[in-house]
Length: 124
Image 1 (cartoon, helix red, strand yellow):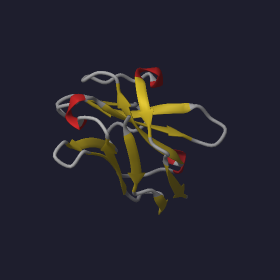
Image 2 (cartoon, one colour):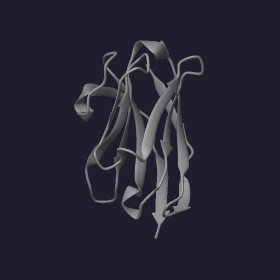
Image 3 (cartoon, one colour):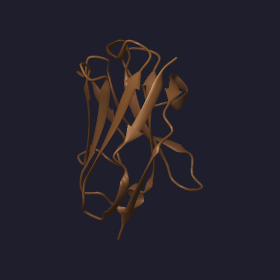
Image 4 (tube, helix red, strand yellow):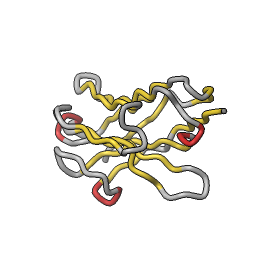
């Protein structure tokens, strides 16, 4: 079993920044890739970013490329999502998740454990 706890969400004005954190426990953190997904009201859960187990490989959705940065600290069992230049369309619940392998993908079915999510609201 893996437990994931997200934090760092909140209300921010357009153009602002937030940093999400996800603390993991229950399995060797450095042995699996991690991802962030988001779900806006009435929409499906969408891929945002992912990072390999070592941190050397990252993937981003086109909608966030150049604005968001995913990183991880294996010593702290934590993955981060730095979000800059936020837009109202970034408003969603953000979830961190563990991948089944060391190199991530963008399909949610590749991921096994999910956190409870943290709300991000961007006002215009």
